[in-house]
Image 1 (tube, protein in one colour):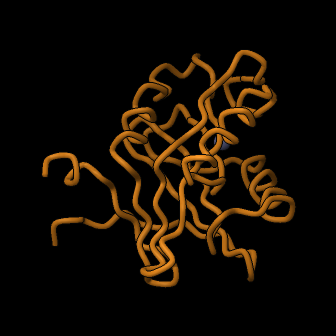
Image 2 (image 1 turned 135 degrees about the vertical axis):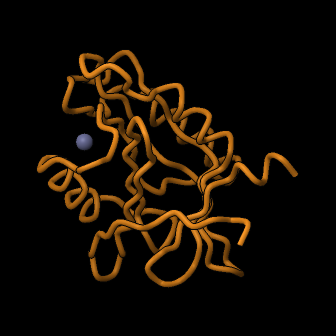
Amino acid sequence: MENEEKISMYLLPNGKNLYIHTKVKAIFSNYIQIHSKSHESGGFILGYENAKTGSIIIDELTVPQKKDTHSRYRFSIKDKQHFIDMNNFRKKESFFLGTWHTHPQDRITPSFIDWIDWKASMRNESPAALYMIFIIVGRQEIAVWAGNRQTKKIIRIKEVSINE
Ligand SMILES: [Zn+2]
């Protein structure tokens, strides 16, 4: 099916797969930071871990809201609408997995602040999967990191072709 081909697959450190739903990729594409003067956007990543296969599926996001703070280089989730949306998605069995934001870069390098934020998230939040997921949406790529809840190690994971 055409839709399935558009799902992105990434390889987790434990050899299982992470899938990004087509719908989620479509939302990301609305927020690509094309102009370097536009502001960073972001929100929560939601989905679930398949208990049988160990795959992680990202199927929902929260998106930027009025009371969030934006700058060219940092996005902070402040608006309570993110939490209201997250509660509603939970009823549809889509749970907190991590965070996403945009960068005005073709190829992504996380900032020093990103690493500080991600490490704090690893300490303070509990994702509904073995890994907490951090995504940065750039102009040419969607870059994904997986943070192991047990070891707290955060490493970048690679996209793999779904048709092989
Ligand atoms: Zn960043």
